[in-house]
Amino acid sequence: MADVGNAQREIRKIAYRLWMEEGQPEGRDREHWERAKEIWNFRHRNDEADASERQMEASGGSRAAPNDATPRRAAH
Image (cartoon, rainbow, N blue to C red; front, side, top):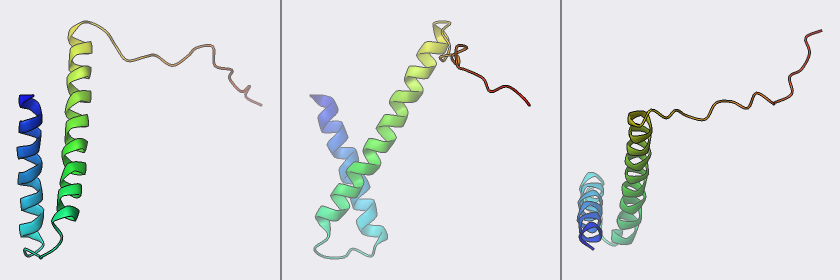
């Protein structure tokens, strides 16, 4: 559950930064919150993908190779 609290704090910081950058407009808190969630989710997805790739490389795995059974077009 601590991760949820951390995520909320980070989203709040992002939303606050967006609000400040836009000149502290009134009545747009929901818009800033939703944009902040999107930014946080984008960053979080990228972090997970990077960690997964590093773990695969550390275990000696590699990315999937192209399928050699793919039909090739003959050169004319």
